[in-house]
Image (cartoon, rainbow, N blue to C red; front, side, top):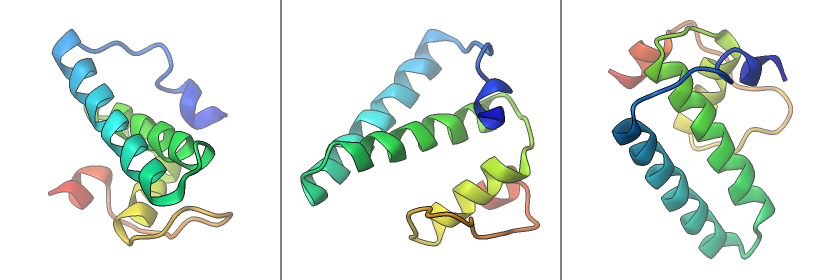
Length: 93
């Protein structure tokens, strides 16, 4: 997928990587406890890893921003993402 390729080879310092991995783990465990499924938590955890990469590397991508916006509106992405004109930084601020 193109969105993953844009950040695939980007690196971060160990502390940042550990923090992102901890957040992803917490997301996975929380969703797993709520659903009893391992598939959905894996997808959501991967999504937040991707969103984090775009934010950390200060890369704007409308698809990744819309993905984040969908989660911010308490929706699990299914097909069409919710749309926003804001940047990732604006959504986080």
